[in-house]
Length: 283
Image (cartoon, rainbow, N blue to C red; front, side, top):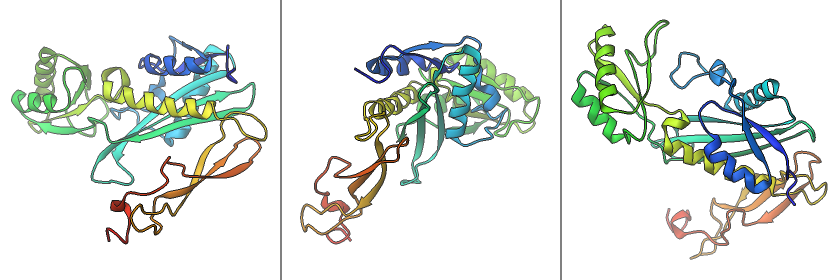
């Protein structure tokens, strides 16, 4: 039986993330509820009217604590996303998602996270409806929403139009934004809120799956969940020359509660590396 079987958790979201988080955590026996009063905009918005003041992890933790303060109970979840260059492939835009579970009853905090280059994160300045529509089609409109604003860094009081998902709404808001603009151009960007971005919603699902793995990974010593990979050591042998490569050969798994740790071979599930990753075969 799962450690959390039969527990009810409140999810801190106003963006319908329960659609993907709920079914996955049901596998751990967790039932989700969502507080209708919950509003995370006080912690920061993607459209930058309210800049995020803390790290993604701290913000996710604050969301979960806020949800608990509003709904009560002792089990909460929240997620937080960030967008920017991929840490290993900086030429590619990436989506980092983390999902946090806070269990006050057992003094546990479990985290699932993932980096993905599967994102439509983009922005562009436009001056005509034709150029706006071309941008929109490139980023998955109308199944993916758009945001229109007079300038990339909104000034206090600037109008911001969000959740645009029809050609008619795009044309109307674009004209309104151009009328307001002082430069003859306006700023378009993808709406990265989960309910307007199916691509991001799937990355949240991947992070939740990673959290489920943590839930289903008990510590060999204290048996609490969360015995997960914390560090890696390189040296996976090349399949051609058998010399060590930078890829991980050893994983260090650690319990956050009792701090027991264990080394395990092949944390990526690979026993040899592709020669393309070998500095000797592919210098």
